[in-house]
Image 1: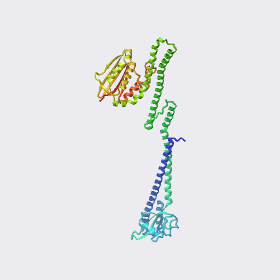
Image 2: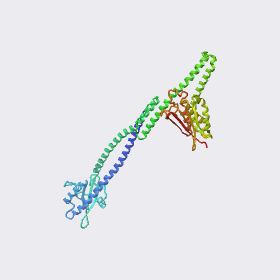
Image 3: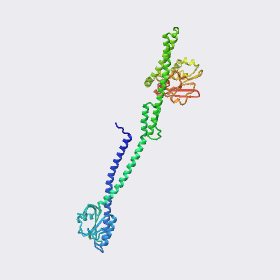
Image 4: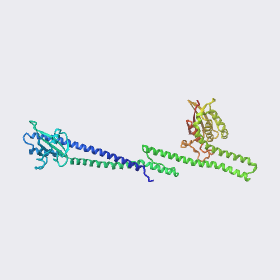
Length: 476
């Protein structure tokens, strides 16, 4: 299928709509302007016949309708008005004309007395007619009666006519100016719209190219910069944020694969080596129990790794449903968790300072999920504490919330790492020299449980002290 860009489609659609609008406007405007020009011309000749009628009436005191001075006067008036003027008697015989020719063909001729008298009765009226052959073609005609200034007796008529050709020529000239202006506007709008649309849609093309790069595995591509305060600017910024998120996810995925590969490789190598040693006799038979114990420990380690990965889906799917129906004693849960880590705590000479209320505090939450939260946070605190230091655990109530705080002494978490410590597969210790038993899932599970319950978890790390605080809701 032939490619047609949004820019091309929008451009031609907009130009088509604009042209249709221009054509419709031109049709309406041409009709209105033509009618206005005719009305204006008719008004001019109607005013002209009244002026000439008054002039002829005044001159009739001393001269007749064929007076030369009267003829010169109407010639001047006719030239100024752009009209042809004739004067006839009451019988319709023409006595004077605005033509400069002394022997004008109109003089001595006759006009339709019925039409002239009818128009003279309403001097504001204007009729398109040939006056029964008086004019070679149709003209717009207006008439006025000439009366004696003393007796008021009707002595003749003034006939003023404007040619249709002159009116049409004026209208065509006006339309020509309009057409030129319209063409200039169309060209200007076309150019401006093309470049404006091209600039506005340029980020979409960049996004398409970036998306194709993502498909090929290159997550470093970005769009922009487009510092524009409109929807395209917002879309570009959102696209770049998405790209950064994808890049982080890809880096975490690769790091996770490397971590898991490392974690799986070591116990599997140990298991394989010791099993082969037992089978081929390299390991003395009397030492079998020792090495079988190592194989058993490494097998359980692999099991814990897989279980942690599977727990993520369970946590994400079950937290809200468990919250609706379950209750948990937070004080007892924390005490039990401390006991389960007693071996690790003693190995590092760590003291536990627990400020836990004697009375039980019941919170909303599923027992296993809350236990997992407490275990992961306390396990991290023990793992990253300096030897012979103190871990402070506090539980307190505030309004309808319960706050649990765990603070340990150890290397501070880098400020740049803090926003990411709850992300999946994130490990602050890149070398795995310290966090050798983890794969970056513990705090991710904690975050999912707490946020799944609609609660909050916060972390502060400075001056070799790290504190995690999370909230739970008191059970009703």
